[in-house]
Structures are given as structure tokens and as C-alpha cells.
Length: 349
Image (spheres, rainbow, N blue to C red):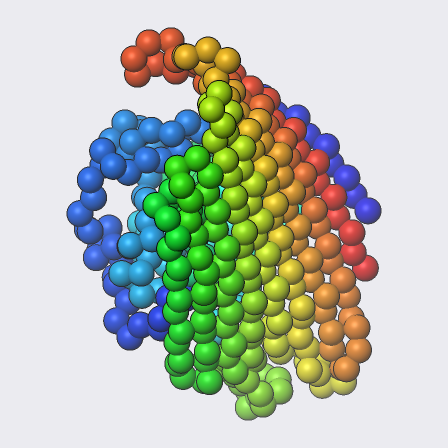
């Protein structure tokens, strides 16, 4: 077991046949005054932000007809991805030429990703349960720590908007016996809000590595995923705002792992699990002073099997806590003071 405590200061939709190109996604008209981003760890309009930011809201996610989160993100300028083959396979994201572990990925303000490898399991995150994505390109280490050398990707799950009960549902079918579906409900009354959603997918996949040239198995490498999100919050009369969120994704992945001598590695597969939990409190001791306390935990687990038996286990856990003070000195001038605490833990065979 390896533990690394660190302290840092801080000053899918239905399968579509015609996905939009990079130019189409980037060229979609936006009202920058209505696009609120958190590139500087404080909410501001995209017009005010000096960072290179791309905001993908729920409407744009549906319009893109992307069937997975990696498929959506590869449409963002400055972002490239590498995939090991087929749906659900390991995917690495590179931003502006930096390494895959130089991009910080957050879900509802909580850092996620493998503690040892550094990358996040983007292929397992359910696109249907995401409300908004902010992609900040360029170094943000002064605000978010050493993981943000290349940029930051903030993912926000669905939340109630205080406009009554609003259900959603989708179902899809595609080639290679691919089935997808999602359902959920969100709502609120202005003071309180909630959201609950589930999403699933199952596909036979494709034969990633040819048996004719490499000696691998003559089989399709399938993938299935079952995910759920739950969030709730409440705003009290005195201005105190409390909210909590949970996202869990479980996956089963088949892959090729036969050695050159064809003596082992048959029937290789892995069961993965990603879980993110976070809670936050916000209040204003003074009119110009906003205090935010946030704590969370992200877990990344994987059990691998081959030759009909257990092969290896890898578990990682990351606990984070942040204390942030936003002090408005004057119109358009905000002083940010706070501290972050992070503890990483790795267990495996």
C-alpha cells in the first residue's frame, strides 16, 4: 500500500449516424453572457474568462449525437485521444500536446483518475447522465495543482433546476448487437433540488486484434456498463447552501491478452468500478465574502481475469478537501484565498 498526503495552497444519447465535425461543434453560436464557467475556480461568464474555454451544455451534447464521452471530447479543439480499440476500451486524452496524465479531470468539483497512472477512465463515464462539460485548455497548475499542466476538464452531472419534476428517457440499438438506454428524473422548487438517473450499455464489440497475423483469439471484445447518479441540495433562509452528489459506474471489458507462445492469457476480461462522492457547503459571512467547503472521495477499481481464473487486482482511492474564500474587493476584482488537501492510496496485487 502506498499513501501520499499532499498539501497545496490555492491564491448515450441515441446512436447517431451523422456526428458533428470539430468545426461544426466549435462553430455553434453561443451567447457568452449566458455561459457560466469556473476556469478560475469562481463562477463567471465565458466572456469574462481569459482562459481558452469550451463549454458543452446538455443541448449541445444531444445535438452532437456522440455515443460516448471520448467521442464527444475529440470534437473539442486542442484535444486528441488514443483508444485501444472498440467501445469501452482504455482511452487516453491529450491536450495541446501534453501527456495524458497532465490533464486534470473533475466531476462536480471532485478530482478523479487513477492514482498510479494519472488518467481518468473517460470511456466508463455515462454521457447521458452529464449536464455540462467545461474544457479549459492551457496550464492551470497555479489554481488546481500539478495535474493541470495541460488543462482541466470539469464534468457536471445532471441536477434539478427548480422547475418542477422533469423526467428523461432514451433507448438505442446499433451494430454489433449494441444496446443503450437511460432514464431518470430531476426536479426542485427553488430552495431544494434533486436528480436521479441510471444509464446502461451493452455491445458485442469488435475483434480488436487479428488472429491471422498476431495469434490472438478469434473473438469479439465486448463491453457493458451500468451507471447511476444521485444528487440533492437545499438552500436555507440564511443563505447557507448544502449539496451532495454521487456517481457510480460499473463495467465489464473483454480484451485480448494471449502471449506469443499461446500458452496463457485466454478469455481475458476485467471488471471495473469507478465511484465519485462529494459534498459541499457554501455561505456568505459578509455580503462580499463567499466561503466554500468541499470534501470528496474518488475510487478506481479493477479486477482482471484470464485463463478462467483471477489474475490481478488494482484499487486506488483519492480523498480531497478544499477550503476557498472569494472576497470581492471591487467590481470585477476578486481575491481568492484557500487551501487544498489531497491523500492518495493504492492497493493491488
